[in-house]
Length: 467
Image (cartoon, rainbow, N blue to C red; front, side, top):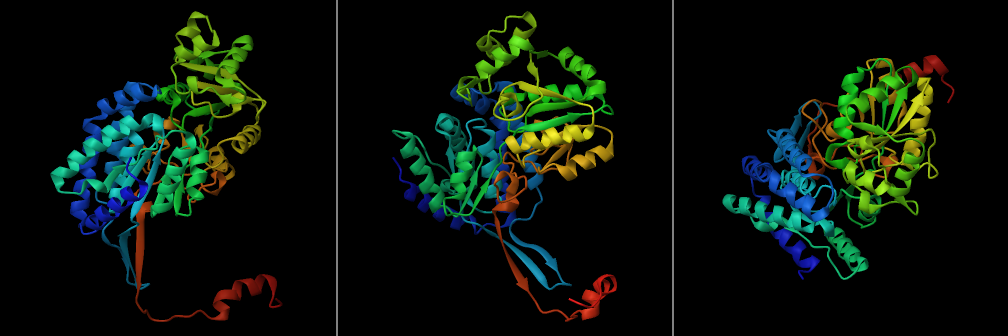
């Protein structure tokens, strides 16, 4: 088995060659990688589902294509080589430089789309990248890297600019040690995986970018266009069987439209599980307090069978709904489910909705995102000012728009950071900008130092001269 040090050494050598490229050369490489993702979207989607058993092929095809094309659209025309910005008034010139070799830890839930995105945004900065996929998704990444290498060959780019490190080992300890060594030897780490892996990245001793845990609460108020909201919620909460961390996990519906919203969702294929059915769903989804991995990102039919839901409508459901009013470990439906199952809360006062969302985020999902279906701008602003999240999506399908969409202005990504609330070093959608070092030339300018009156005059008038 190739050693980690050998992979890193080859990556550094390739990166030095990338550093010689001009902007046009870099953009050709990024476009070539994007075309691999788009042209082979179906192939990679089928392989991902076959290998991992998570999600569904049709949605993964859409994800591979849309995310890759959206990322390329963001990168097209963006400067990442040479002078980024000149500010004559301040005498500052900014110059883009690579960060070096990036270690990218990628998840089992998106074994095609996330590596494609990581390759594009790292190469854009003339960096080499070493992908370390989840062992259960290694085959999909291997095929992707093979296809990317063929594209790099056409452009005369060293294959070692994009490598894959296998984390398969005799046991979890050896696999973990191999990942830790990779992160320690790289120049920058990006972790798009669970909390334990993100923490390992931050503890590696190498500068790191990590993502936050999802558990998105979404409000529907009386001013919302209910039919439109129902369409978007169903589209999003069922997409790829909820593999996305941005899938709706709870709905918070104003009492005056509660029944109408549920009716609209049920008309589109949602099934409300009450009483014993809700208990059966809970028993199936959680084993000893943890999500049953066998039901993560599975179809509603599989979940219905596991829970013993025999009602004809349950067997044909696109999405399961459960009514909830509590939060925390004793109310598992209040947390992230990674399945087409959404909890529903009813509220009379908007402040009550905000309070329950605060509690849900404190339990799981702090920093990640919230959504709202409303035409009341005052409420939208109140939610945004209060919620400790990095993204507030308004009247959108949450998992479709959260990582960037052609219908909003967020950067396309598959790595969504959650700020310090979520234990991350940034609150951004992670893009090529995070894989640049910037050198600043500082030239002398005409000195215009402020007087004490300039700086303190307003303060003196309001509070006096006494310190």
